[in-house]
Image (tube, rainbow, N blue to C red; front, side, top):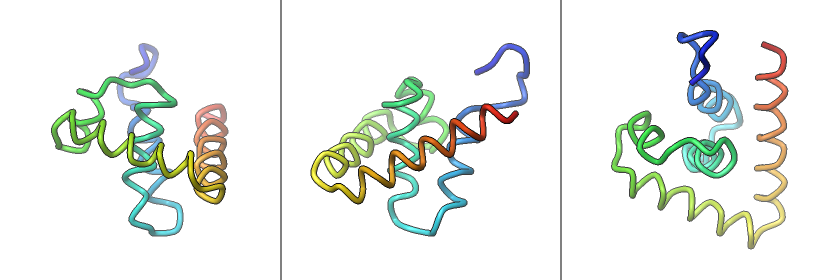
Length: 92
């Protein structure tokens, strides 16, 4: 995804950060949401990364977005996670 380093993949950075958090069932949904809704990667690329259909990736992201919209704790979790990913990418 970045021309100056073809060995680096933003999807890896996001997924690694999600897996490194406390182990929850939301890690994959959180990573999928960030890839699709924040990083604006394509559904096809995200789905391929997680070895699923694009519609499944979209459904996961949409489900997580509903949780963000209805739960302040989830909203804070997502915001902190996004900040962590951005800080990590900046430090590279």
